[in-house]
Length: 190
View 1 (tube, rainbow, N blue to C red):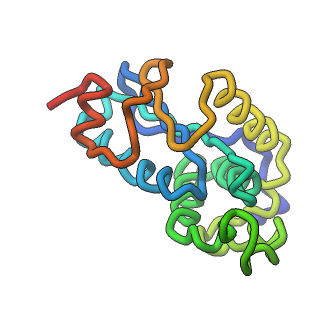
View 2 (cartoon, rainbow, N blue to C red):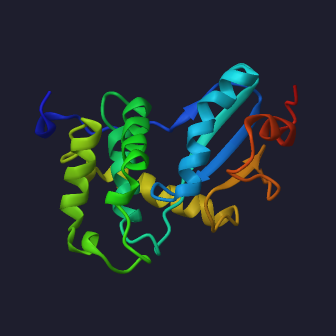
């Protein structure tokens, strides 16, 4: 199906597992610490069992990362394609794997300052193998982007990565901790 013929879809939430305990990871898609946390999410679910834990990725766009809004929208656009959350994960992974292409030196200078939003979208599409041209324009993607921003603010989350367990933010958690440490803090120790 070509991009112009794609049906408008709701972005599928990026989630892993289906357990009673809910673990939310608030991640900014160009942040190096969020990258480190993102890499641990699927292994965490594998370690505790997908019937024990539900991990939900919340996208936290931060304005000092100049392309943050465009990159976040690309991830949501990818998850609005027929491939759903797997496409969202692929787009997010592509950005994390090539972070230096989507950040500016000291957040305000360097060669990436010459990139336009359209070039950012095209580069993420190229790296992920997902056609983002039409899904990027979906109203459902716009609504999802606004929902993520509002949800983060309502939960008092302003920095990335941040974490919540069963709706309560947990400031003791960090991306530098091991999966075993996370398990303890979540209440699913070995």
